[in-house]
Length: 164
Image (cartoon, rainbow, N blue to C red; front, top):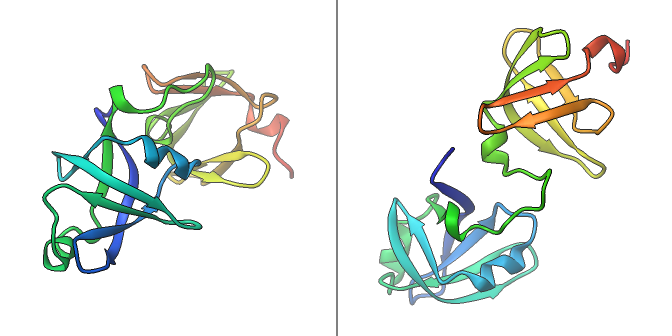
């Protein structure tokens, strides 16, 4: 499992004093208010302040003090260490831990590795892109077990739930 988790991507500068406009990669942007330290390019940085907008976050990070400094960080990711990440309830997982997991059905048939997780209004969907492309709704009736430690997910056989 990855040591650092991406919580946002710097999409632009904001103002002239080094503030960064961040696109959040978390389902609750209010979490940014609690950040004391983040990692950018693997370097630990202190968060000076945070301002929330509708769907964006403005961050002031120590050591980034001008628009010229801020431009250098455009498109970089804001990460937190796994220890500083929020604690997920049992049965919930970070997307980064799901991507790359091998999906098997109950009969042991290898369906491929998860390429991405698509978020929909009602449930997430696991996307297997290799071989025969497959979209797996993340529902209790379909997903039997998730073991991120061993990167293995077991589901019901496709023919039992997929529309023909």
